[in-house]
Length: 271
Image 1: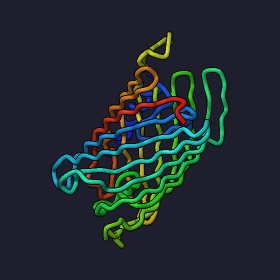
Image 2: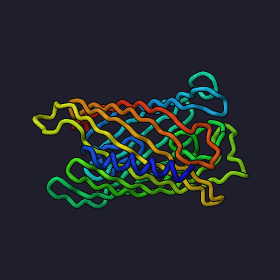
Image 3: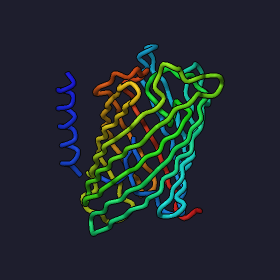
């Protein structure tokens, strides 16, 4: 069964690189940064199919993003969900990314960046999957490489993740692994417009991302695939619609699939 799923994944990836995209991914950050001196506001809305309780969980992650200069950017994010009944705040995090390498040519470039995330959370620890960007207290340290070839973008991310006890007396279970190696491979292509006339044209991107996590302490892992549609209006406002589904998983997870709807708006030269 896994062999057929991976074959289907390769077909999706081929379709992704055979179409037209931009260097703006949804489940992973590219190595490039947002414009210098800019301010961004982002609202991520997750609808997750909770298989443990047969219901849909809603997770809301608002973010404020700062482009401090052309190499350094900073995110501050909050975590909210209705998992325990009514909507409640569960934690917050800080993400920082530094672009340290750039090779720029006409219609193509290659860039690399290092990043770190630190998060706090007060929710109960209910799964083996480690997610310090919504469920776990802990940190991430990683590296990103992104190449843009005319209208096609390809990006790879690898990062280490460490989870700790959550606040509110929600301790990390002793029998569960608290360290993870995460990776992603992302493909995107610009579909419209075929020719640029001005910055007010609406951009339409299609992308596919493969996301994985390995727990080195016990060898458990998962592999997800996430196709997505992306619209950019007036070069400032972005709408992402994505669906993530597990291709393979032997990690205990409350949600094996989910829908993400994200809205983002940039304000230029405000810092």
